[in-house]
Length: 230
Length: 106
Image (tube, rainbow over all chains, first blue to last red; front, side, top):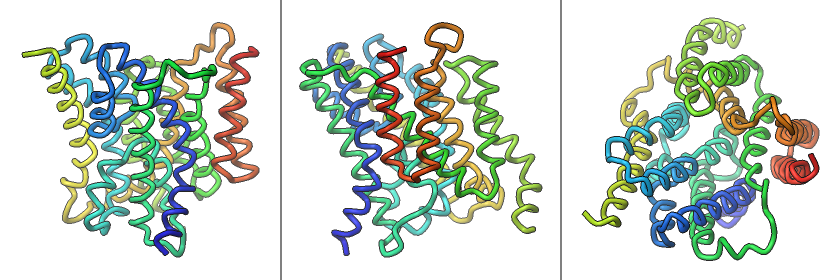
């Protein structure tokens, strides 16, 4: 039973494996080039576990940023995690002692694997989600450490393999689109983000996007709930 | 403070803020989830995944060669394959392969 759940969780986590190893290796190489070796790579992967923020963090550490600047930047880059947690509140409510681990590991990629709420019918949903989260964290740590140790020795050009993260989100988006009864939330997310990208530019559009998405979804609430009832 | 000591403090700050952001909603709504937050929990996943797609493509330059074509074509292949076969792993492998090929050709 447990072995079966482990296998199902492993298969579910496979799409993240390639992307995490590649992005982790890239991070390990950059961190080493900035003068921080394998222990730093391990510590950041284990304690922060936030892909894009770790990349930004290299610049902060190497550039001698202040504590306040570091805290503010982290808040801006990672504010989207508030959203992931809000949408998992009801789902993780009864996860018991696994709950802190599930919340800690709620990265973009883990979220995109688990946010559809589907778990194998014969598995304990919380255990399944915990294992997916755990596998993903292991891939990430392995990637960051490997990048720091052997990154420069890679025998082939892997340029472009980091696109696997984009395809992961595109596949999740398409799957949501197929199964959803109502496409308004998906269109709201896409449209608001594109609009804010045009107005605010690629470095600053995330926070305005989140505010706009929340605003539009609040306005649509009455309409969405009427539709569901009908 | 030594350079390593300062770096360790910054890593700790980044970890603490990240963890706080992930835990905050669970701490605030520990007892009872307001109806509005429950509603957001239902509609946000689809919207946020849409935002992440835009986030991944944000640095594509549509005005200069290759006009973001490798990324847009590969993303379209991924979506079409997902719609056809419904296998995430297959869509991701094929889409990534298409991108790696296209950036070398275009």
